[in-house]
Amino acid sequence: MSHSTVTSLPDDAIEGLQAGTLAPYLGPGMLSLCGTCPVPATPLALAQHLASLSSVPGKIRHRSSAVAQFIENFKHRKTLVAYLDKAYAAVPAPSPLHRWLATLPAPLIVDTWYDGTLRSALSGRTDWAEVQGLSQSEHFGTWTGWYTAAGDAQPDPIDAATVLYKPWGGRLPASNYLCSDTDFVEVLTEIDIQTPIPALVQARRTRLGFVFLGCRFDDQLPRAFARQILKRSRGPCYAVLPEAPTRMEARFLDELRITRIALPLAQAAAVLTGAAALPVA
Image 1 (cartoon, rainbow, N blue to C red):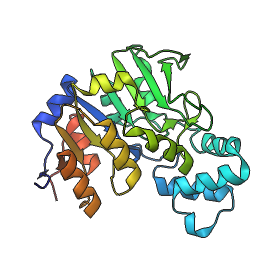
Image 2: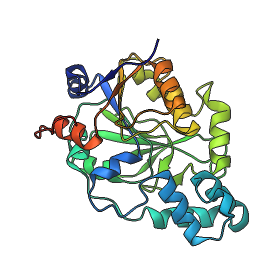
Image 3: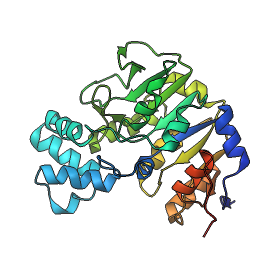
């Protein structure tokens, strides 16, 4: 059975987000809503940024994980982290959609990019916590790190009203990054048995569906993470995906029974935040 496609934002998706029964799942495309963006806002932009700081072979210049691996191999992990810290030192101003998402009673928000935009949007609240994926090259045997809303590291899971889950890490608060090929291989080796996914996230997802915003699934990495993060989730799932899906994206949407919302992200954001939406072209 093929995935379904709709051309307007379903009421069920809006109401589910507002009620906290659907969890936002954010990708780097969210940064397209932030106006002038001071950080690399796509995997390609990150690859090009890293390549501008270190000479790398031309054949890998368009793959951020391969560029990161080359830098890690030949210039040390600390150099890679320093380059990523520089790339994401600035925090983009949260868009109206970021700010709206930060007001929701969401038990879980997944954010799969390295910027601190949503953390900034959440800064007016104290009832949230963050859990990030950790690189095994720096934290061997420890898969995740927990942080309070103030950014203080905690040894144990935090049962906050909203948990922000950044499976690839982030610049804030502690410069944790899953970025190199080795980082991802280490996690993907274990992710089928769910070891890298926090138990609290596993528990909360059983009561949730997901709404993908700013995500593409035209690469194996985002598909692999989404597949495992959504495992045993309650559903339903929606994805704002204006572009016609690639063959592999279509298979992924079919597999996870994700309804595609064929709207530009900016238009979906306008509907969600209560602004007047433009007609579908």
